[in-house]
Length: 202
Image (cartoon, rainbow, N blue to C red; front, side, top):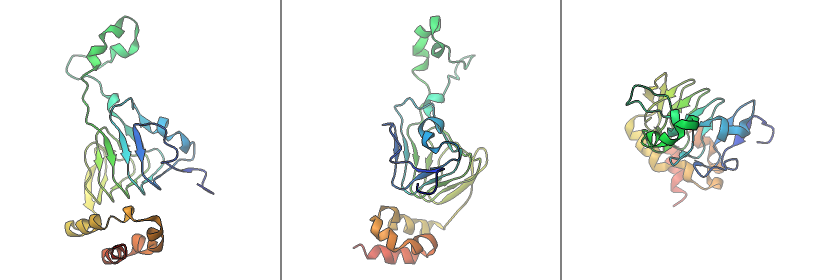
């Protein structure tokens, strides 16, 4: 981003067919934000995908651990002998049925704090906030705030009826020009303000 050398928009940066990032989602890192695919998405050999929605803010050190990090746990040893090659390589079938929790999905307008770790198959709802250093092992509800290791729900940002209203508005799907006209409502307005802005699109 212009004037922000530590910040990159993810969508134009992504080259892997296994990663999707929505418009305006960004990653911040003072070392090398352009290395996001290799430094922040780990053990990603497929077939599962990492899907990141629009308008997400990812702080320095956010890590996505993907399914290929799994080891067998049904025998005496968890060591992945076949990956070491040599005489052990012909036992590759021992790695074919590792646990797979499917795609890892981050909704729209999600803020993930510094050093947070997202484990395989986690689904993070729209508008959620992931606290600094959190380890997300499962699902996070829409507009939920989680923290800790393992991450636990601290609270939701809105009551359930209001969350339903926000999801119905889905401002992140508005045309960019309409978002630009209503940035104040999106950032500091009420749900009623957003609903009023949404009616202008009809």
